Length: 375
Image (cartoon, rainbow, N blue to C red; front, side, top):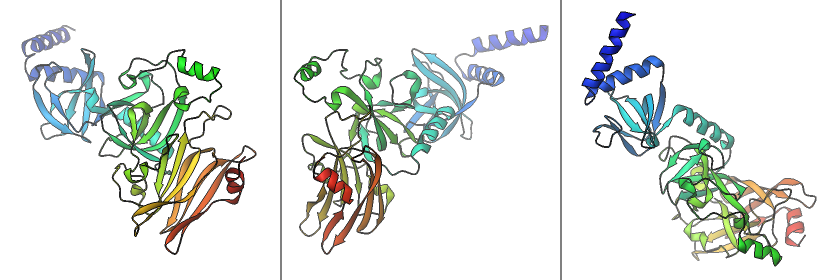
């Protein structure tokens, strides 16, 4: 017992004596390993520094880059910032401190991977880019418990799904620092009194389930607050949007490459598209809003160097995702889930083909009868 007491005194004295150098780090690291605080983390920042301590005046020890793995030895909070004590996998096995926002732990990474399993067999539905740094979350809600990590401003991603969540007061968090409605909105109340239709963006916030490329993040999936997201609609088709109808999903019909069906780059080459759109009116049935209420098929004439409309739904449809395209060359089909006259949701198959120099489409007959001629 006396020996253990003397050892503890010696360690404490050594920590006090060498707190300005590596000895203190060695002591704390050893104690951490003894109590079993051990995990792994992956760097999510483009680059970050492992430092001698979490103090402002600390020196940089080693630069690490996105995707590198680190051993997590300890964790602390300093001036409201979380720091991890880590060990790098370099030749020197460098140990030091790194800000938590620069890494994602193995536990968090596993949660993100599990979320990605939900859409592993589905194509992207749209593409987006962050307007500002924003928290990636496990669920479409503002609670701090759901935060996975923070994505950098201008990060790009594929949108796999979205959800309309009723507007409510939310915590004062960094990715909700926009004007939020209170319990009573004068404009909404006035519209109700005038019997005007409810507006989608006044009643709901949209959340996007996104797929992240490894070049952006080692964590593959999560939810983003919609008001921080800008859809990356290809520039050459964006002007087909009407003021009361916005594009929400699009896929190429002239490529077999899955990674080019929905591009995260606005400046894509002209081509053929199927586009889903949405008006701003509330259209909930049994508490569920449609993901889209309009369908548009566009084709590009290479000789005239202009687009033409192959087919457009003239009446409002009521559909939910996903949009799936199949086929090869100019012979393609796309499938949508649409509500029928009896209220049932059915998969409807649209056939796209080339007739001489023009692209044409054959819609399902019952869709033409129900939606095109009016319900």
